[in-house]
Amino acid sequence: MATMRKVMSLGILYGLLLAALAYAQDYASFMAQGDQMWLARSGSDEKVIAAIKLYEQAAQTDPKQAEPYCQIARGYYFLGRFAPAAKKEELYKKGVAAGEKAIGLNANSPCAHYWYAVCLAKSLENKSVVEKLKYKSKMESNLEFCRKSDPKYYYGGPDRVIGMVAFKNPLANNSMAIEHLRQSLKLYPDYSLTLVNLAEVLIKEKQYAEAEQLCKKTLTLTPMKGFERELADDQVQAKKLLASIPK
Image (cartoon, rainbow, N blue to C red; front, side, top):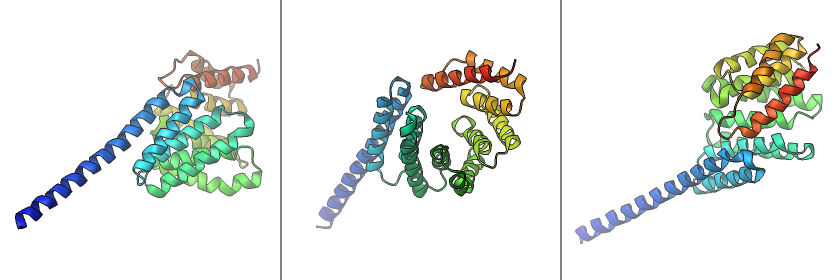
């Protein structure tokens, strides 16, 4: 009888182990499929929406994981970047919500703090001075957490976004913006968004020669896989900035 109970217990444990492995494989499969769809994002917004849905399925499979929500926030940031003006805020707010969820699940995740702060900053771009100042410290603290944890995250993203928050905030600090953007560019010298962001601030400060070099460099770049649409957009911005430089 004891032997039978032992066999049954081992059978139950084995069954639970198999179920756990299948569960993990489902999570990993959904994340991998989402990542593949994300790499195809330049093709259409539908690819991004499909990626978000796959990450949502991964989150349902393992509700304790923060990573799917980080990637959901990233997806909504991308959709917001290329959306018509009337739809941008709604999409960025969805990214904020996903970022909040990720932080709640893993407060030590650099990507959770990063995408939360990025989406929050973008959702506030057309808000009042009072509204922007209300969330200024929250944006900065989340970005600073990411910068200290993983300064290289998303191509020097923490310093890049800190710089642009400093530039676009009502209490604009262009010298701080330039300092952080230079640091981001030092980490990833060929990342097109940092190049045009820094050029924009330098033009504001009448540092035209360097801004022109950065814009021209942007126009020579070829896209990394998945970044085709982003680079094309940054190159359009580079041309506009070049045209704005006094001759």
